[in-house]
Length: 307
Ligand SMILES: Cc1cc2nc3c(=O)[nH]c(=O)nc-3n(C[C@H](O)[C@H](O)[C@H](O)COP(=O)(O)OP(=O)(O)OC[C@H]3O[C@@H](n4cnc5c(N)ncnc54)[C@H](O)[C@@H]3O)c2cc1C
Image (cartoon, rainbow, N blue to C red):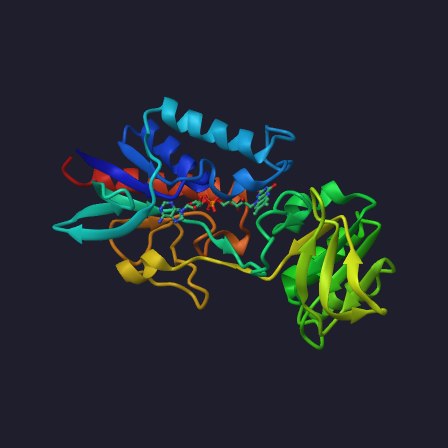
């Protein structure tokens, strides 16, 4: 079978693309091992219209169910290669399966940069988060730390200072590199302490994160006690398919798309966090918007070709 669309990735952008595609009667298959993609990591999603306070896992299950009910093919496999042969895309997976499709939508998201500390994964969702926008509200009147020193970290620390009792900003550099206006705003907060020239070198706690070990003592202490830590040291696409397929990317390997989510390569669209679209605002609402736009563009594209 030759699918109309191969959708690579299984996050919000993928399901939205699939749902729209199925309703256009375009056959489609979604590739990915993590149902819901990154949003499945969110303890609670509180900003998706119509579904107030839903866990990331529940939202992911709903996305998948809707796509499946409408007829999407689902392959719980990772795509390892894509080749275009005589106008048809050959999609190869890590289970040695091969699929064919007339078009491709890449929705591969990004990977949060990690501190690379031994217990980092263990504390994910148990005091450790890579998304302050998403999880800040769980730390009302608590003590938190933000790791990083650029805009994302400075903005996160500022936002957290409105919610948490105390915020430490831990940064390895000698000065914060965020936009001056954001830095000024942060400096004015009375409940924020900035720890410069310091790196977290360990995470500790019984069942959840309780303290961070620092590379050098701060106020005479090697540890800061916290209820939570937000790692805000960036997030980037892996760039795999951009390299393989010759897609145009920006300096950080985000795939360049036009307003229809089309890439520079005919037959390939991209949607969600892996792209340069939506003004760099990478959220579920933008991912699902872009997925829908890509499916709509493919519907128009395929309508002009013999089926
Ligand atoms: C902890 C956390 C909480 C968040 N909370 C919120 C929130 O409350 N509200 C909000 O709007 N946003 C939130 N976000 C952001 C939101 O998760 C993302 O903006 C959204 O998931 C992007 O969707 P996407 O489909 O573009 O990519 P993703 O959700 O990242 O999905 C991409 C998927 O593709 C898979 N993939 C990658 N390469 C391949 C391959 N080669 N083959 C197969 N599969 C592949 C990845 O493993 C991943 O599962 C949160 C993020 C995090 C980390």
